[in-house]
Length: 105
Image 1 (cartoon, rainbow, N blue to C red):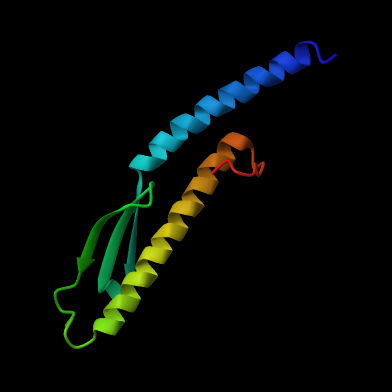
Image 2 (tube, helix red, strand yellow; image 1 turned 30 degrees about the vertical axis):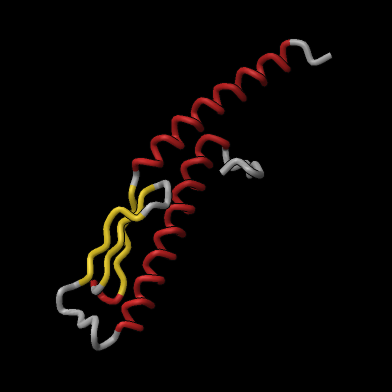
């Protein structure tokens, strides 16, 4: 019924799957860095959404304002997660041609 068109489409899909797998491996190695509080706190997160580093400015007094530091940490981690999602969507979009494929990533 579909003949050569179906076979050609299957080859394209297989190629796209390979490219996506390669990209997913590449994204695992990438990192994003987020700075909050005017440099008071920096977090580095990889593409697997694992924190790789946290830096707290030595001039921050943890004893004086633990709540502020906790808020900064939450903000930084949430922003890093958002940036990883954005990076993943952007890179996957290059492969999928902007098609939104549910459950893909």
